[in-house]
Image 1 (cartoon, helix red, strand yellow):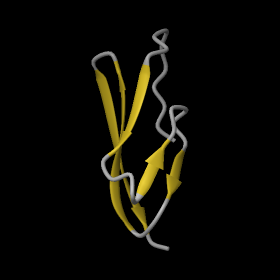
Image 2 (tube, one colour):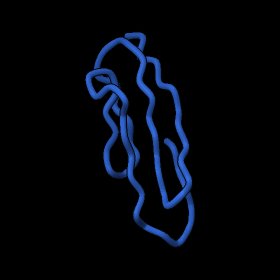
Image 3 (cartoon, one colour):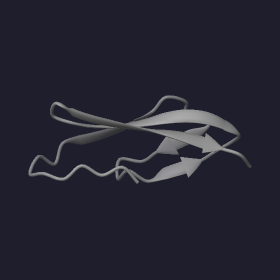
Length: 56
């Protein structure tokens, strides 16, 4: 799970490929099928990304 702390509660999560991995507004990532996706979380000017590889 990607997590950014702070007082701003406006955080957004995005998957580069929803068919491979989806991400909920809470930050929970769900594998959907084999492949690779980049999950990105943004808060204000801070952005973190994580590469997710689904193998099964």
